[in-house]
Length: 367
Ligand SMILES: [Zn+2]
Image 1: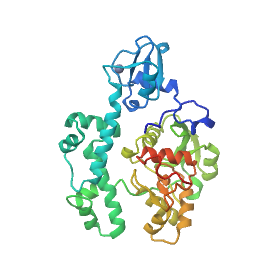
Image 2 (image 1 turned 120 degrees about the horizontal axis):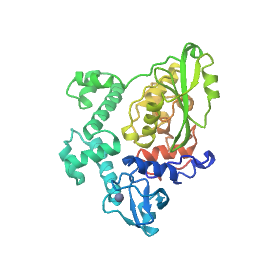
Image 3 (image 1 turned 45 degrees about the horizontal axis):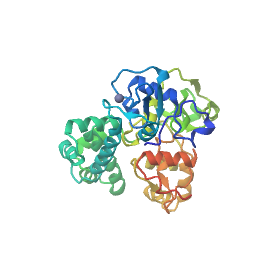
Image 4 (image 1 turned 90 degrees about the vertical axis):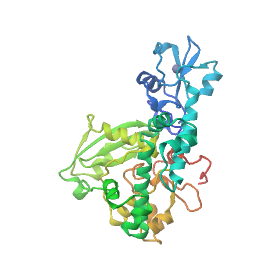
């Protein structure tokens, strides 16, 4: 996560290779908003007081001219600054480590953990811990556990096909609680993809992400395209009969959700997706959606999971034909030997996405 520093208006050619480059305008905006999401990722140091803070520091904002920004607390200290006693910017790292540890505990737990058990294990008071967990992941520990159970049910359903077994295996008390929260997780709703998008309106916009400029396009049903280094021309090609319009703000929520999926994948919201392909492509894409953040699969595993164990190459192409990157997580597919394999958006982006999901950067770098 630490590598996901915003790049704002950095020229596109430099974005992927200079992920740690800090854009001062974005940093200043985060300080003005007192944005907790940027805590631990940028540090603002005040030249007149010699003190550095995290963005959410409650202290009065200094003049813009008096502030410089650093990507780590260490850099701020090396430049001669002391940490703020009020916002304690050095403790951000400790919070993040505790949240990561708690996520691991929840994932490994056979039975549900209480908030108190969880907080005690990572050394925090329950209420305080609930707050920092939610601040970092956007959901409470209980909500996180619920989402995990629901993803596991899908996996179990896939492997044994018996709903009731799968429901109990995944830790639900009974089928009704399963159906109530699994409903919105499955499925895509193809619409614009029939007949070149006839009768559909597709809105699109560009936005800046930690991975560089991205294009997002959506029908009234959901996101039909999310890509890197892309332009309106590809939409015109894919949907020759649709009405394609540049967005005037209606996509704001989807853009925010997509950014969250990149920056905080462990707690990414389920965004509506509107794609269609061949039956085989759709089976692959659906299977990709079942890979939890933080895990990877090989092409061979995906092929086996959709019932075509020999179609490893075809899985590779379907993976490459994915129109909605990140949300249909084709970056979570790697080669059987553990090397990264390719990525439509470039291998650097794949590394960054996997690192944000907690994969150690030195893990699968052979390519
Ligand atoms: Zn402060």
